[in-house]
Length: 114
Length: 109
Image 1 (cartoon, rainbow over the protein chains, first blue to last red):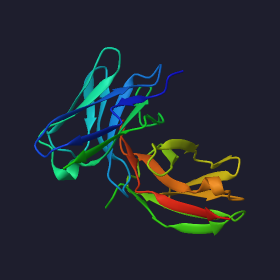
Image 2: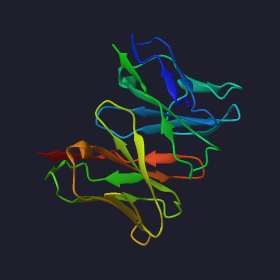
Image 3: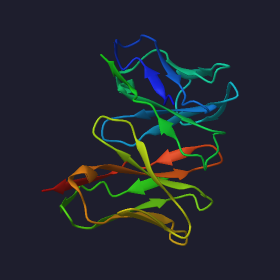
Image 4: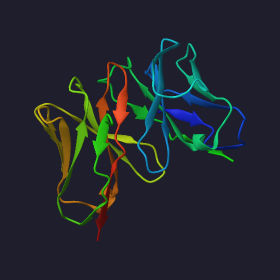
């Protein structure tokens, strides 16, 4: 039973560049949520995708965008990277995406912006 | 006010000790509560859900106090392997789960 997989594991980018992070949900899950975790902080909700639509969004600028594909996998895109975007980006999957559904996390992508 | 607030700790306890800590949440309409565990530079992993009547899972006990809007986690007979950051998670609305900043627990031999 495959868990949540994310790629790449690590990434180094320069300010102003764009980045795409990828996530495959746990088998049987249909909902993908993305979180940003800065060092020493808890994960911050970016957005959630369900049925290929962005269903809920956190307090992040439009530079952060995403997509969900028919096979439930998802991408997170960040444009015009800032130094402050350096963080661990976590993808979490769940079934139905309701607030009572626990999240299962991938290993994360560690993004460094220089 | 933050949606979920936790005492960051750290709580430094000897093996075999009991440690407990709380988490407060701001949305009185929240219905779902969880504790996650996160090891250094790893992803969060579900430790346990928190039910209205309180619940136990081995050495771990979670309680919910709706009137005061806090949940608690108690760890009995602490093991070295319990050293981690414990994240409190609360649903902010129908779809969004909000995380606290975490409480760090260090168990020493």
